[in-house]
Amino acid sequence: MTAPRQWQDEVLAGPGGAMTDEVGVITGPLTLRTTGGADGKVRFDIQYTDADEWYTLTGSPVAHGDPAALHAAALRAIRTGGGAVAPLPHA
Image (tube, rainbow, N blue to C red):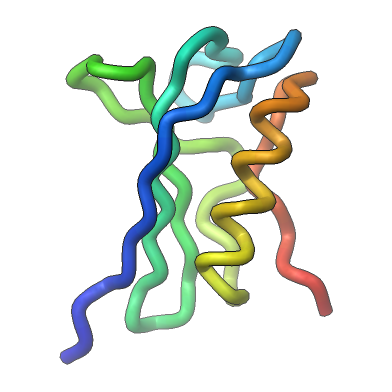
């Protein structure tokens, strides 16, 4: 079995922050973790930087796509804010 591939970066959310399934919009300094699973699904988890709790970025997981490219797209979306959600892979 292949281990999941994972990317993690700190990001400052733009106005309107990022939307989570559990608590709604979160703002400020955040940490995004993107995991590409062996099943092809890409999962996005987000937290307040240095917090213990992780939340699901709304729209996660996405069915398929390049996890590294999707991680970069999610970081851009969060920096922009406006209730950012998980990016969709390009068809």
